[in-house]
Length: 268
Ligand SMILES: NC(=O)c1ccc[n+]([C@@H]2O[C@H](COP(=O)([O-])OP(=O)(O)OC[C@H]3O[C@@H](n4cnc5c(N)ncnc54)[C@H](OP(=O)(O)O)[C@@H]3O)[C@@H](O)[C@H]2O)c1
Image (cartoon, rainbow, N blue to C red; front, side, top):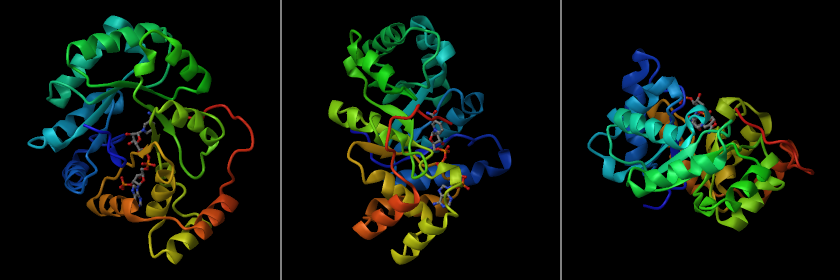
């Protein structure tokens, strides 16, 4: 299954019983609208987000491109196997489409890659990747035996966090490694921006839609907004049909300046 360009995040979902029904409805609506990539992690709510995802995709597993992540503290060769088994159990499935190292920690990347290769051979994951790795770490990773199989790097990327455009994004594009843009609407913080609002009004769109279309304008970039309501999911889906014209892009560049030099990788 190819990786869909627009997916759904699940951080902070599944924590509040009062919101559960609406969150399940939102995820299901997203799948129905083609946002079939669901991004979760063992970390989110200590497994509660994975359990929510299991319920949301019940009866639709075949349609879903499931992504989950192993914590760096579990990323030894044996730890990866144990963590994946626990995630599969919570997700009520026998495999995930993509398994990511959440960020790099004390276990050597070479060991984590061996753990991923064991899982590939056992059919428990279809592909593996990483998250929050900077350019130097990515160069080290692809130079490792088997490292070239890395299928994604999930990174903080939105209008206000453009640092990767300087070097890591073009490098990833050249390597053919998809970038999964997380927090693509900066957790809602950029949505009140004046210029973003002006661009949205001119295009008869919403700020969230413009912010997502802006992330998706780049080749090889996938976006995974988190939405806890059906109306936000529908709005996000509409970003796939919105093309930003030169005037909008120029206005956004003037407000959210592109990087002029290398910067340390930002993460949330
Ligand atoms: N790999 C990593 O280290 C990492 C780090 C952070 C996030 N992630 C992943 O990326 C996903 C997305 O990032 P995120 O959750 O941090 O932030 P985000 O997707 O940028 O923002 C989520 C916030 O935006 C609101 N929102 C979404 N769509 C909207 C719309 N159309 N109109 C108005 N508000 C809207 C949501 O509100 P409602 O909930 O009310 O809809 C929520 O408060 C996460 O859920 C997670 O799966 C990965």
